[in-house]
Each structure stands twice: as structure tokens, then as C-alpha cells.
Length: 118
View 1 (cartoon, rainbow, N blue to C red):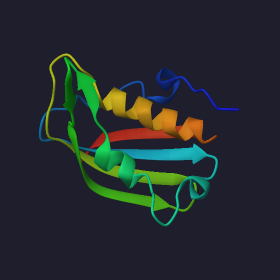
View 2 (spheres, helix red, strand yellow):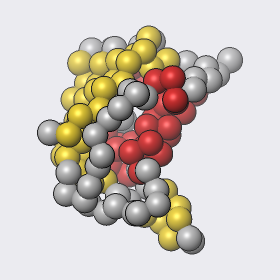
View 3 (spheres, one colour):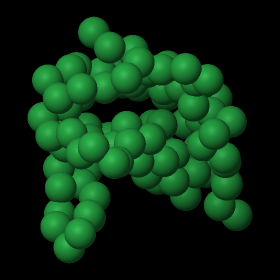
């Protein structure tokens, strides 16, 4: 059975306001085993490199992956740079929601999510 988490319970109560040019570090701790999700050909860097969303009929890719590391089976960090910022969209919340959905689909629960501007 697929896990279903509520993003509002995982997101920090406050996180920095993100502007174009900012680099954000997402640190994710999980209950589950990231090793089961990743393989020699796939890791979650693929998710961060290819993440995009649709708005007004256009596909937008607001982030550029700067650095990705996975520490064992319970922690990952992604440094993503905001290269395009829409006025009326919280792209950071969208990418976190999609990441949570991917992990939950694979029976991996996010236990902690840290968001910081670096």
C-alpha cells in the first residue's frame, strides 16, 4: 500500500523566501530505505535534474541542480538554484510535494525536511 503524507505537516513552519538566483539546500531524512529506490542507473539526482511543472500551457523548469548527495539509506541533500521565479507560484512547495509523492509511492516516509538558503 502506498504511503500518503501531508506536506503541510512535513514542511518547516517557516522557511526562507526564495528569489531568483538563490541556492536552496533541501535536506531530507526518511523512514525507509533509499537504497531500495535507487539503482546503479538511477538516483534521486535524476528527479532534481528533470523536475518541471506546467503553468499556463508552458513547461517550466525553475531549478538547476548544483549538488546532490545521498548518505546511506536515510538522508539526501540537494542544492538547487532558483533560475526562474514566478510571482504567483511557490515552486519550492511544488518540488517538495512531488518529491514526497515519489518517495511515498515507493513506501518511503519523509521524517524530516530542512530547507535553507545557502
